[in-house]
Image (cartoon, rainbow, N blue to C red):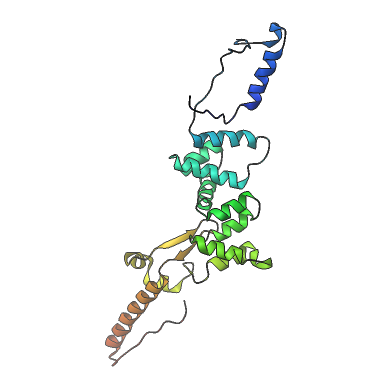
Length: 234
């Protein structure tokens, strides 16, 4: 017989056993009959992912669910085919909250273990999630001491060298459509709603090319022998 695990129902099981232990049948009579060792009990068979969720939902009635447990539960349900919206409806969370937890589920395993052991806070983990690079996440965390471990500084450290899409003059000049058509993409930080350019060097090249073409057009229109465009900063 295959091994069977029970995810919930311990208190109900204990209550039935207590009723069975009573000597007077009248005292252990329920609407469905007297509780004996062959008393029928309804059992719901669910997937492993759902079993984990059911167990944690029961436990959360007594104490708040640990963030690491949430991340693991949402990841398992997602792997089981549930969408963020479906997971949110099932457990009473917003779709946005589920999406953020699923983002954390992709973090370096050692950092997720640290969250479960309360060695890193949820805010710190969210800051480190600004990069997809596991090695960079771990390097920044391992070298973060004192004030450098504050979420703001952790986010700045993992994003060092990245170019923000917010108020980016080159992007405004070139145009998002042109940048994307050339193969440029964006990555977004779900926790700050800020976007970053994945191909800043290409964007600068596109900006130089457009500026050069405009300079040549101005020179031709004005009858100049030459014109040159220059880019200063971003």
